[in-house]
Image: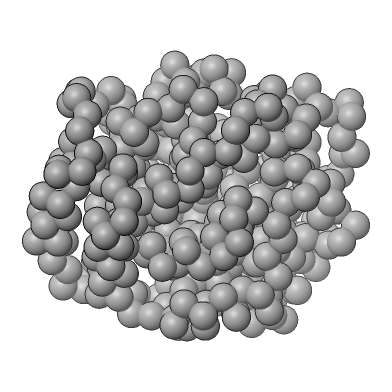
Length: 367
C-alpha cells in the first residue's frame, strides 16, 4: 500500500517514470475490470445553484445573468428513455445544489426504473442534502451518488467554495452509511493547491470507503473570480488518475470531459492513465448551452465520439457494474498492488524531492 509521501512523489513524475506509472495503473484496471469502460448517460437538470464557488460559472452570484432552467418530472423520464434507447443503463442526473431537486428527481425515479424493468443504475450528483433527503432518494430507487469534495485542504476549500468542508464530508459519510455506491473527487490545479493536498484528496477518498473517484483539471472559466488564472499542467491530473487506480484498484475512475477541453485527446490520455468510465451527454439542445459548468465552450461528449474513444484505447464499452447483468465485485479479483506500488515508489523517489508533512484531512465521522 502506498504511503502519503510516496503518493506525493508519484504525482510529480514525468517521462519514463510516468509511463511506468500509467502501465501499472492499466495492469490493475485490467485485473479488476478486464477491458470494460462503463458508459454513463448524463442529463443536466438545472443550472440554478445556491453555492458560490469561485471556479464555477453557475455560482450563486451569476444567477441574475444566467438563463435559468429546471427540468420537471416528465422531462426527467423522457431523458431516461433517451439513455435507454442508446443502449446505456446508467441514468445520471446532475445539477446545481438546490433543495427542489430532491422532490422532482425522487418522483421521476420509479417511472424511469420501470422503463428499464429495474435493470438500471440511477446515479445522482445534486450536492449537499440532509440525511433524510438522501434516504428518500434511495428509497425511491437511486443507486449511486457523486459528491465531490473538490479539495481536502479545509482552508482552500472554504476560500474556493465559501462552504465548510466538514459539512461536505458529513454528507459523504451519510451517503456511505445509507448504502449508496458513492463517488467523490477533486479539482487538480486550483490556485494555492499543493501536491501534498492532492495526495490527501486521494487518501481521503480511500478513508471514506467510496466506490468511485475522479480528478478534473482546473479550468479558469469565464465569468468567475478565477477566470484570469492560468491553466496548469495536465500531467498532475493524469498522475492522480493513475494513483487512484493504484491506491484502490476496484474504483470506477472517469476520464472527464474537462480533460478534452484542456487538450486534444485528453480523454484518451485519461483512459491510458487507467480510467474506466466515460460520461455521454444527453442534455437536450435547448438547455445544453445554459449549463455553464466550464463556460459556453465546454466540450460535449456525444455517443459516437465516446464509443470511438473507447475503441481507440483498445477497450470495450460496458453497462453498469453495480446493477443488472453487468454487476460484479472488482474486489473479488486477485490484485497485487503492493509490489507494483513499491517499485513505482522507488523510481519516483529519485526524481521528486519534497519535505514530508503530516496528513491533515479529517477522519470520517462515526455514527
